Image (cartoon, rainbow, N blue to C red; front, side, top):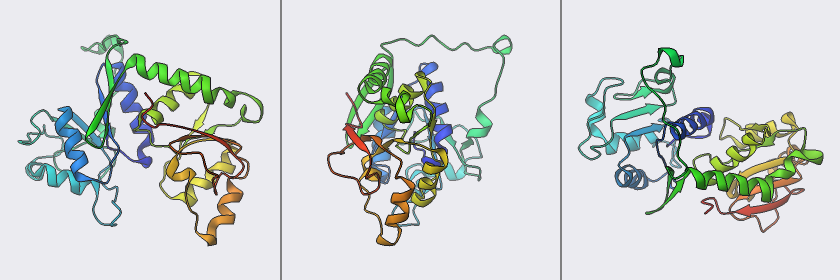
Length: 279
């Protein structure tokens, strides 16, 4: 998985579908590093890749599509949707993008998912096993494996220790604002925790901080699940008061990473932090 915030729906559909089908999801944390993508693809022997090709790196010009083209030059000679034949990644056979522009050798997400009634399908989805490895998460060159049972246990722990409060008091009737990275064990487990307990979430579909934060008062959210980068963001002086006003009703937060200091953005929130790789 190598998608961005604008493809949250596709990301979650793909992860849930993969788990249901007994397919392992591979994620990595250094999203702006071509070598990290190379390590994740090569070490995991991934058979497929879902990515957002036009997501730009910090230099403003290089994209994730650039990384992929550099690593798999054979793509330039393939037709759209052709099976991948890479000398560097012999196991990789299918690449899917979440956007709409043409990209040689790559399928579009909207074209690969077709609903078929069970009575008309020649395939059967296997029953998910508790000891099946559902996720492999790369942290630099290190990797951690998570079974189906691990993810369920992590989701339950997040609910019992942190998120059950979102069904009570001031949080009870408002959606949880969830602008966290869904490609981390924390992000997926938090979503699983909230959705399995019938708690509504709002996941923004943009990287733009201003546009993202406008959704907080619009949704009426009083609880946020986010990464430490957003929780600890240093706001430009010209926008600080506006951003703080947008988030003034947020009184609770669960943070992937460090939440020990006070947040400029969520200054009224009582926060707790957990490791984004959980355990």
